[in-house]
Image (cartoon, rainbow, N blue to C red; front, top):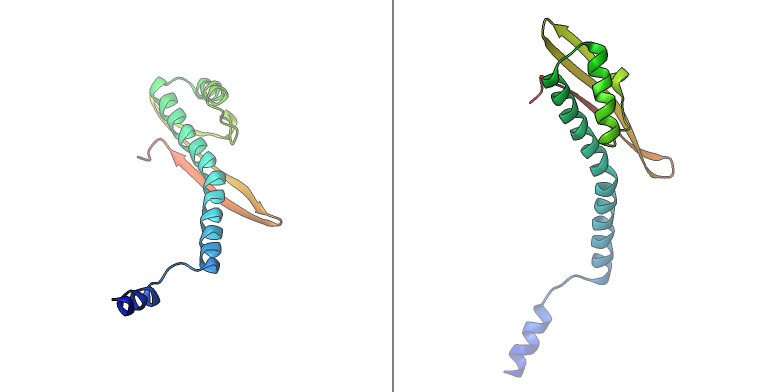
Length: 123
């Protein structure tokens, strides 16, 4: 019985200290990336909701830009403002679109560039 338990211990495998350090480095990098990217994606989704709500309200192009600026102020949208929106009116219907780039600094000279774009025709 003693020989069997020592044989089982010899064949057990686990994570070495080096493997653990590498694993923690990878998990840490992913966590840092998520903490930097998620707020920009949340802002993008807020912009999409704002332009959908502005389209539903209707109005003239200047009124829509002003309404977006009001919603941007309340919703903490800093990436774009009303003048950055492309608004095309077809009678009473309007198509509102936007596009912008977000640069997220990572380490030293390394940055992450994300292109965000959307319109009221996207679903």
